[in-house]
Image (tube, rainbow, N blue to C red; front, top):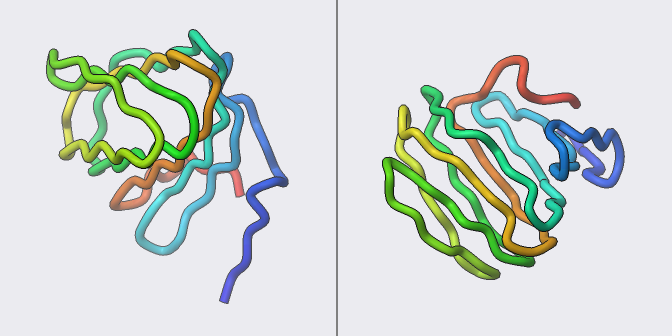
Length: 107
């Protein structure tokens, strides 16, 4: 068993996106604290990506469709889906990628 304290090893991966990034054998996880107006540029990758919004609101654009997501909502992005994210408020989200994203994690 491996235990990770997500309150440690925090990094600011992009302006306004602070969190702990780690991988299991099959998945990569990010526990993000995000600041209002912080953005993640449009990009895609080979992994499926699941966003679970715990606090706050995000604007998520995937394949040209933009939606607002908030607490309790989950957005599931298929592999190779071009997507971008903008924080509408401060908040917290847990993101899981499958399979792992080598080099993306910190812990």
